[in-house]
Length: 528
Image 1: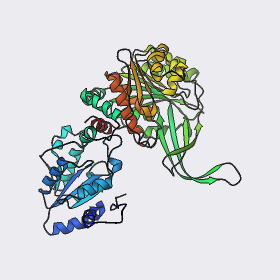
Image 2: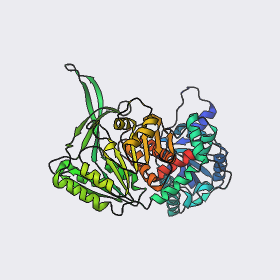
Image 3: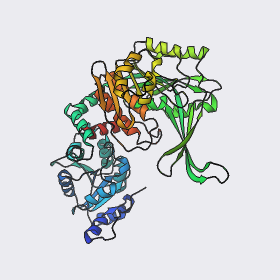
Image 4: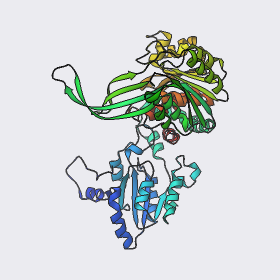
């Protein structure tokens, strides 16, 4: 949907306000204006960006852009497509558009509802497309978009130009010179910045790119039934709802694999799925990233675990209740032997073995023994949920190289509900599981990390804007496990996991995975 002309809360509009407002158009409105200008011999220049915090660098850039032609159009990235880190953009699209339109040498402003400028370039076909000097070296553009945009502009005879003047980073200015972040978070990010954490994380990303990873865990189908509340029924104590739609997502170990797919070379999944229509095998395979291989164990007469959540979308994403469709009896006999045999074969050559144990019957004692006896780098997450509360504890695994869980799971594992989380993580858990690196997530407070060498540290949460928490812990665990294997410090692990979690809570269900480009832009924006 394209943006409409902005409106103001006050009914009093000055002449200046109106002269600014009429510059803001939708993308589809501009072609007739452009044709008219071109027919009179005018050339069109397009500049594109977020323009979250207007500064002298933006002003000089747009001044230089105007000199490349007669008509200057500026496209602003819409709010939902800004990948600049948690809580960004600071200013809403309408305010950003108004700020740019207030510049006298800007002729029109449009809001682009896409992650790249390709759509607006296609529609407007500028004679000149202008970017800042920081994009002149395409190899330094972490998105790769500048190469695509240049190719598109050249395809119809336009040209790409780079301005060369004073530059600033909006993210850096926001991070260092505003109170946008709470003081404790601002100090934490400043400390990471001073340690060169961004550069180290980017180096680890390059190393991780060659990994071959084996994932062992439960496949889950997450079903979202969207409803509208109608109110209480007249004769029963029930709330009636009206169905408004449904979405199916490939969750569990499948979602974890997809989160890692853009970061790793190869990923293979061992899981159990049902047979026939209730197995969802075609659906699962159709939702795998290109470099992810599925090696399933087929369980006859048993469905693939499906968790159906009923969600009232009237005010955000309010989950009303959920229904499980599953049979969580453990694998026995030939099926269990098949799993153990597969683990034995597939661990050969794997850089890391990552276990996502949801406690739905896949991983029994025999499989655990096979996993811990192998000398692969072993990462384990054993989750508690409504179906297994108190029965699927991390203590099932006597050894691991990295374990990750949430605070309730950690307290269940050590049977301690009143000690500080620091004592649970740093003293009690190491007595229960032979593991040198431990992370416990603490919801809105971020996470607590521990290693034998570094001791305890805490990493604060990076966002308070939450759309959907489903799968956020899996994203945290999946990506942090890769960085543990690469040799990152526990402080870096906490930050990486919180970045992944912050991205994931902004996604409904598993509509998208954590993409490498988005991840890198988040890290850059926070540590700029």
